[in-house]
Image 1 (tube, one colour):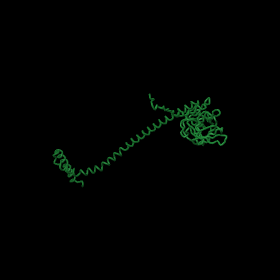
Image 2 (cartoon, one colour):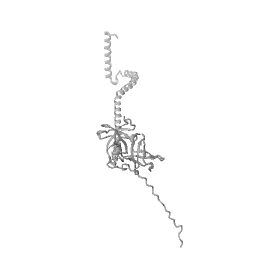
Image 3 (cartoon, helix red, strand yellow):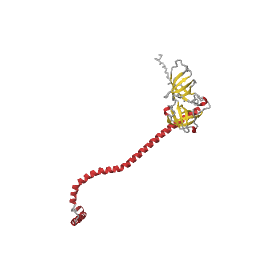
Image 4 (cartoon, one colour):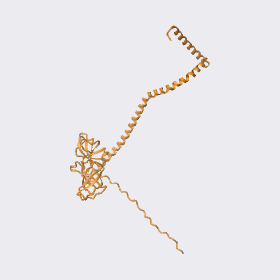
Length: 310
């Protein structure tokens, strides 16, 4: 429509009529003469409004979901962090209990042998020195650690110190193929030498080829001159196999060490040797043999078959 004087007059007239109809409708209330027209318009345009609302509502809900998704993601992320922290706390508590048990067992072992020890934690496996079975501990020269000191834990012999830094040291484990330690049999005092085999067993050669040994017999360290690199009496392991002697001058044994080398955590370096050889006192007590069940003997008493007649 072109902007002319007539069009402006028509627009003013239509606005005036609209206001007049609104006034009549409001004043008429429920008896308004426009009620029928309003109902007709509602009938005509109601389905269209419902359809438009049906299309627009999902869009509105999606917009709301997008608007709230950031908050939900933040809440989920916060809950995940809380769960992770809780799991870490529980795991840390379990590890602390395990470490406390290891430390307690090691202190009892050191006390039994009268070893002065410096506690340390295994912080790395393997080393640059080329040894195949080594660990690094978090104690060094500043802690009084020196080369050729015995390393043990609550179970027994772990190895010996080979390299010392200011704050860390390298320990050659007893199962390394280059490891050798003098051993002594429990009770019989038979002397031998144990060598690592890179696995779960040690190979021990007794100097006496006719030594009477059997499965289950136990060994401890024999000790070195000036207690370096080994102090005496540290539990080594127990015999799992006795190889045939075949007339050899030595007797070969397979010994399972007490220490689990793949599970090392808390260890102790012997910085003060014992005043006297503890002999076999550091070995754990052997489990008591079960007592045989008492046998019950029932003696049958013959009954009188008949009473004597008068």
